Length: 145
Image (tube, rainbow, N blue to C red; front, side, top):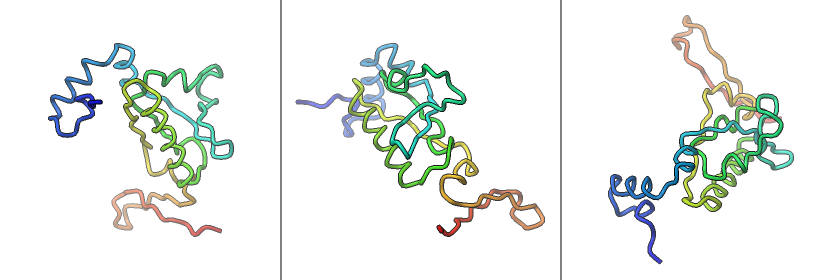
């Protein structure tokens, strides 16, 4: 079985992009321009919507059936152990790669360092300009208790 051009690393970027775009349906193209904000629940192991911001009838699997371009703030919705969070994101990526027609993984991002402070057991502070940091955020891991 030959692999599609878009998955063939020996082909040029231009060839791969052209091939992928020619294979994509309009729904898949729209999905790649779309983002979902999911809440990773380490206790249950579920990837569930952030119920406080998204309607209760939101179904993540339905929203990602054609793929998804971006998963916003997977660690920014609630405290989450970073190792468990990475495992959950990897499982989600595997579902996207193996469970969608074209197997395109999503981009995951967290907007700021401060969003990670609750999930990593760390302290994020913004020191004053007089300390010589010019207002940059400083991350200081805290010892686990």
